[in-house]
Length: 55
Image (cartoon, rainbow, N blue to C red; front, side, top):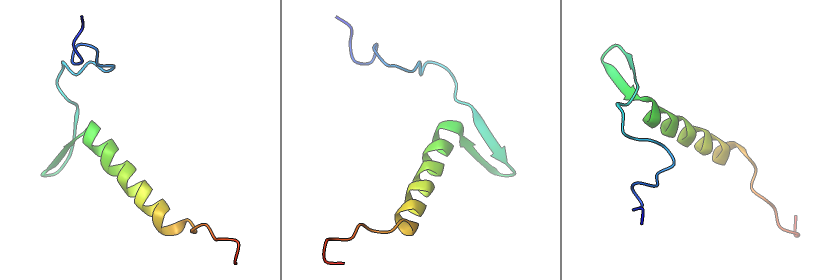
């Protein structure tokens, strides 16, 4: 039987790709997570809440 680690959809057995600006360095995977968190936060702030039948 294959273990859960052997059945990963993405091969994680290689070095990460990094982006750097000056003294700051972040991996591409972490950058994707950070950007998606900002997008979800902005959507939560700017999208209107659903209204009930009373309005």
